[in-house]
Image 1 (cartoon, one colour):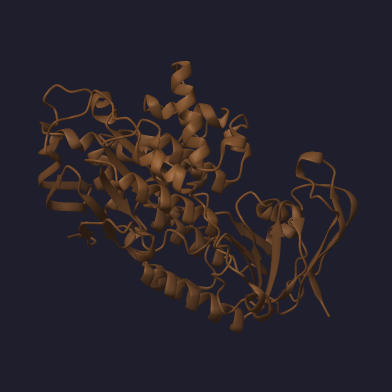
Image 2 (cartoon, rainbow, N blue to C red; image 1 turned 30 degrees about the vertical axis):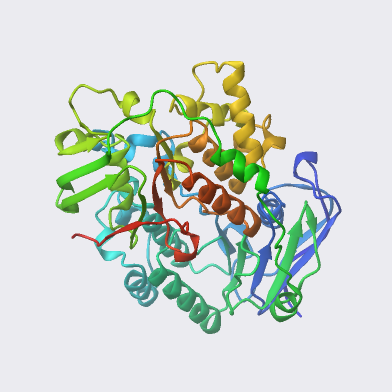
Length: 483
């Protein structure tokens, strides 16, 4: 049988990138593989090893990409890590740049970033599938998290790779697009020599076009088994992830002495946002009262992130709109920091922009002053609070590790702890469970549920998965594209 990728007894030259045992795995002709495992288990490390990123000290790594004419790895294996990057636009990217039109002049446009297209039939199919046509003249930096994923998928699939590796490809996509992506991948695997490797954190969410599963845990690579065998033996972890003691300690947290006293937390009056000839929000009215728990939904590109950027005072257009926060009209003299000290926020945009390689506890501490990076040394009592929240999120053991050297899932937990660390009156969670494994998803959901029990706490929760919403959701706002 033809082995497309074969790794035998592989040991990375650099000790930082080694598994606990020499690596042996293969991708045979006709197979479609799911690499599954919890956060920080070594899944991405395995992918980097089999794609040749890390030179081997021992063992051998061989490829046979036939019927592809070329046997070069970079021409045959395409890896979409879905770290929400803008490619070349990322070089000097900063968090609020997406909302600042004067800083977007040099950002590339979607149509210029797709490269040369030879397969017009596949192009037409992908453009229709992912609704690329309306995005062609849009700057990459203006794409929403979901739109960015659609662009990355389209660009990569148009190169006709022999092996396509995707890291959690379905997260961040609305339900309709998830179903469409599943269908197009299934069609591609049946019509061409393309073979797919999915890297998944959700251990029980394995598409039916996958033929085999390779489990990874604690930098140990398990035995490859068929999808059917894996699912038949899969036992979900139902252990308690947040003890009653910790849950109660969240509920019983002392309240600060600088709380707002307005019944109205957010009010938007006929708010419209336009970029060029594109209307993102049109005459939107929205009122959020103290203690309400809102679910914000809408398809990719409907304007959810833009709306949240107005609430968080990250969007310059917010000062030209009729917006009130905590009972005070925007632009009435308050500073952006006076607004932000009452708000805890996490989002894919923030994760993308947070490129500070500080110890993770310093990243959490930066939430005390709403900075990207730590510019003010916290007091010992504040550092204790940071450690407390890291313990709640199950990441206290990595408090001294550099942020950029931990897994993407661990990074998301760190940024979540950052959002909670000042016990905010308004908590905004935009796709908070992105990239988290089953256990950590349950943990975060339990923490949010406990936080919702606190008096007068107001929440805006964004997700494309209904089952992720807290049980305490009281109100809903659904945005529609261009409406």
